[in-house]
Amino acid sequence: MSYTGKSNPNQYGAGLAYNGLLATKTGPDMKYEQIVLLPALAERWEVQDAQTYTFHLRKGLKFADLPPVNGRELTSADVKWSYEYASRTGQFGDKKLPQAQFNWFFEGATGIETPDPSTVVLKFKEPYVPFINYAGSYNNPIVAHEIFDQYGNFKDHMVGTGPFQLDEATVQKGSRWTWKKNQSYWDAGKPYIDEIRWLVMTEDAAAVAAFESRQLDLIGSTGDVFGLPQAQQIPKVYANAVQYEYLPTGPTLWLDINNRAAPLSDVRVRQALSLAINRDEFITTFAGGKGAWALPGAGPDTFTQDEIKQILHYDPAQAKQLLSQAGYANGVDLDFTYPGSAYGQDYISHLQLLQAQAKKAGINITLRSQDKTSWSSLEMTGKYLITANPKTSAMPGGDIDGYVYANFHSGTGENRYGVSDPQLDAMLEAQRREPDAARRAELVRQAVRFISEQVYGIAVFRAAQYQFWQPSVKGYAPNAWSVTVPQAGSWLDS
Image (cartoon, rainbow, N blue to C red; front, side, top):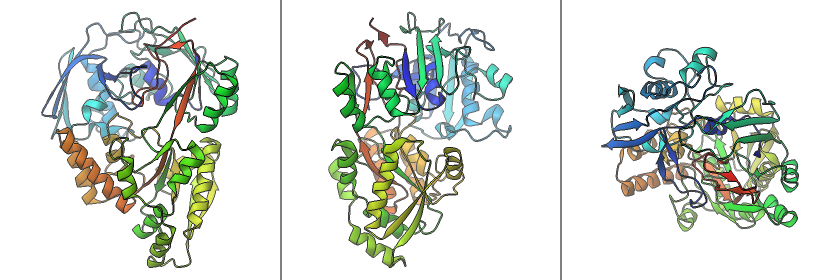
């Protein structure tokens, strides 16, 4: 099986090789944005007051029979080790490791208990509603300590319990990653596919050509964004292609605003920039009308489109008034850094339209291209003024908390925007503690409204996206909360 990707496997590869305690359901009977939790390494679980989580592991679980793990049994001790490593707590509390990307999955945890080899108990100091979804995230895998013991990290080696394992002997870094069926996979009879070949193709045109000539079985997955051009081209030249259209859960264009740096440290300048954006023009130009306005921190069901259009407005004249009030009557200059062609030509076209729209409001954006490594370093260290990311998978743990809390709470590593607002922090913490779903949803709505009023970030629009696969690919459909590649339940009909 082959498909395209534009990077190293990263979390997508981990989603093939590893499992979490829980998983999210995938397949043709699931909507793209739908979340249904399923047993995975844990066959059952109990939640007490959203504060104590007890997981009961399947019997006879084994890691893949590959060095240095060599097929040994997985027990509750591995869950404890993995969760302490991911949260940098317990035995890792004093090892001075770099902050983990998703350590906020575990904020407020007071301890992990393993009363027997098949039982794990996590306790939090106060109710923590999102964790059950985080237990099912592919970004929260159970790993084998032997890899860390031997290599000191998990960057270049992975041996897990997942349906496919990386075949390092046939990997060609930069061009192909090969995954072979895990013969000791715990779900008997699966996976149905023997091998997945992940071809790294840096140009969309080359990937489309390879798909049309049947060299690829699936395109538009693993983080690639296939939009209107592909949707228009592929059916014309390959009528048998299966086309799947969906709206991403997060914005196609998301502006990272450094709230610490002038002039964007002034809320009036941030508000002016938001008012200068004509979102309907973005949707018409780049999505053929198939798209939606977006709010920072909002999931696909947080607000209706009518509600969003009452919160956001397009008003260049008002933008100019705000700039004048902020002391920029003659306009304001913004340096906008971006990672060259790393995100493709559509991304650059998005920025150029943004630049043209902002100019009408007196905001002069200078686009400065950088190599991706330098750009990423500046963004991570807060040494930028404004940039943009596609944030189409806005909730990495399958919970709205993974978007709104992770990006805007002052205490998380994902908040690279310098947002530090005690009033907002209190809102974000309150939604984490609320077990009633309706009340929690309203708390999230309040927080998102506040973020939008203060313009701590700008989500521009969500554009329809597409995946394509050969008719021979069966049992597959993408889901926002799982790895968007064929997994254990997919097969090829020859």
